[in-house]
Image (cartoon, rainbow, N blue to C red; front, side, top):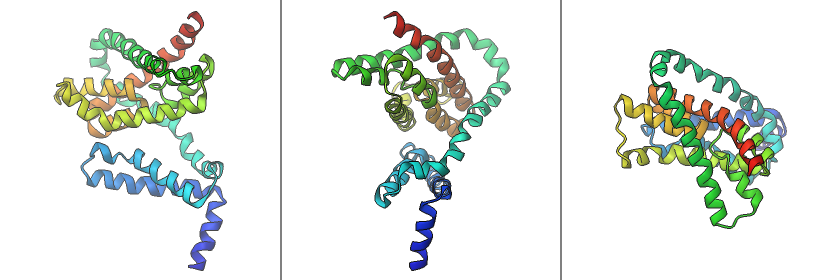
Length: 241
């Protein structure tokens, strides 16, 4: 027991702690997710966040100490997003056939996500900086933080909203699409994926990729389109109004 305590004290003070904890927790969460037949409530990202946050809280390890090691995984988010282009390249012929509809659907979905967030925040009489932090919640977190900074929001608060939005989308998407009557044929999977990528960015795209290859490809496309559109249009609209 004394040896274990000494090992814990050593690991908790080094970057190795954050890296090891993240990998171990996620591997176990992913194994449980597969064993439970990819049930939405067993989402490995959700349970990894819960477990790691609980460990940090109970042990008193500061977040900067944890992130000193976890940053190596954080760095891989960029290459992971770029890798989403490969499934799109494999489907380039069908994308050429649908490009018009996709370009109409992307701004419509992005507008619905941001306007509804603004409307809810305004209806609840939230402080203006919180409202503006909500607006880019459906854009992937790093980009959403940059947008929030430009439109008067709080970047760190936007990051929280973005993660929560992604988790809610990944957890509820299946049931919502079923309730809306969106089928699980080839066309239905494309619609489900594009919807998840539009509303729930990277976490939703990851969920779509795990369930169906077509859904994952279209979720990645939607994610990329929202990043471009939101980065260009949200600061412009904010300056105008």
